[in-house]
Length: 132
Image (tube, rainbow, N blue to C red; front, side, top):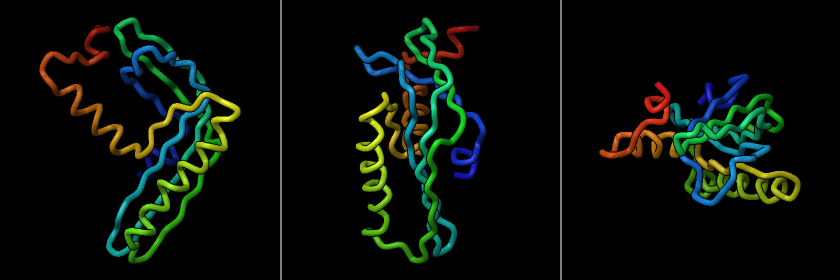
């Protein structure tokens, strides 16, 4: 969790939604981690430095500088408290998408796992391998 929250730069390589341009100006995601009875949550907004069509059907996006970050820790988190991160994410998204184009990643861990699963399926090539 620490790496996706505090990293100075984040690089994402993904297959864009068909018919959608990759001219995002902002990336928004959240992350959570459990350690014993403690649960840490982080809501992160980053500005996009560059977005590139890689010519393989994939897009590359590099973001820098945290423009918004909210982190909190809850002891013995209930299901209601666990849903608050998603509610906070949705609220913040509704506020910022009035002024910018947002790449909405929701739970960053689920996003990464879905990419890993997609890249492991037969017939799906890894965009990095296509460049080599």
